[in-house]
Figure 1 (cartoon, rainbow, N blue to C red):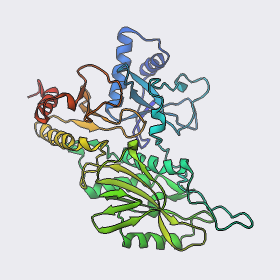
Figure 2: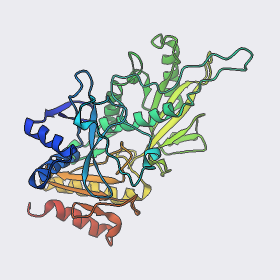
Figure 3: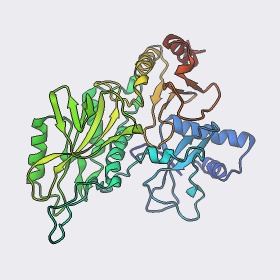
Figure 4: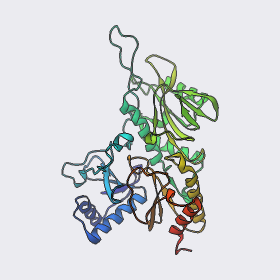
Length: 397
């Protein structure tokens, strides 16, 4: 068993003792101090934003993430959708889920996408049946649509945009550079990296540049040609994408895929498929669009609901202040997995970990204890700020 980054880079291999500990944990054989050790190990992995890669398959890499059960407040390991299957005799083949909320699996269809695997974001054009009018193939398959949202969330996770720390801070150019770097690991089709046909600015000039590259490309062979447009936009409504550079907006003909299934005010990080609508056409247009709300145009940290913006800005300011006092705090938000996305995990040098939720209403039962707090339970933003500061600064100054 190995600990890995979201981009699959190796952090370290577990020691034999740690490996044995996790086997006992998933089989339910631990109690007392051993169970506490296992929970501490998993908590550190979760707080660091890492995943586990199982070595039960010699040529594959089954991926697991550490989740928090909202009903019991306990940790459990969950197999990432879309990754390799475990060997039939592997102890980690079990996929524990929260039985009390089975409907959540339908709310968030997104899954982490393994790198170096063709994305298949939109289908090839279908040949018309004899006597039929026109040709289909507008990428209407729901699985294809959901893969666009999965890709956007994967870019955010692997690019580290869901992590904030003063010493890791990047300007807007640096954040988009991370997104482009991750995109280079994901081929649109076989041997065609997404970064080759990705524009990180949504305007007519860059759409024409992308169209020219797609039109002149021979890399797609007989497959449907398509590229991607990624930008921070102001809003998406009535099948139009609006940004600060165009009052009229840009039409899209497909679906708008929402993170969390609920519309949230902009700014939004939007990813759109750009392709001809029919075979033989030289008219390119936006097909499907996926979006994730972000804190600001300069800070692409994901926001689950609009009510989070004010306390999130406070937390970022507080993290910068604590860093000036010599205390490094890292804030992470899980964006893939379907559960717990309204929770933020703040950790300080791995010895203090605090989970906070900034939404007004809980999405379900929540864990109890001093390591989880909800902003809505505090009298004001200032009292919440003082609590978080005290949690991490107490005994250090």
